[in-house]
Image (tube, rainbow, N blue to C red; front, side, top):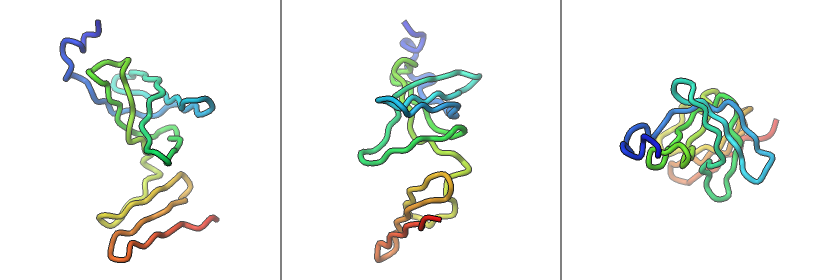
Length: 119
């Protein structure tokens, strides 16, 4: 029995940093470092339908331990601090990748969509 079974509210969320990604197989395997050099290697990474990505080493995110149990872990919200596009207007949405490529939906009247051209 995990100690967390008696104290399920303790330690259910961790801030983690990606140290390795393997996207070759059926599932994407993400290895992350947590607090005090905890290492988590999991295949449960939440991504919305029709949208996928491969986080790069150094990306930061949130690891959730369902019921406080490390064997029930999943990770969300991985993003590298150097890649995130900053200074957006409230309500704007941007899909981006490393290297500056992005698709932006601007929220003011008109619902304009801007696609960053290749180059």
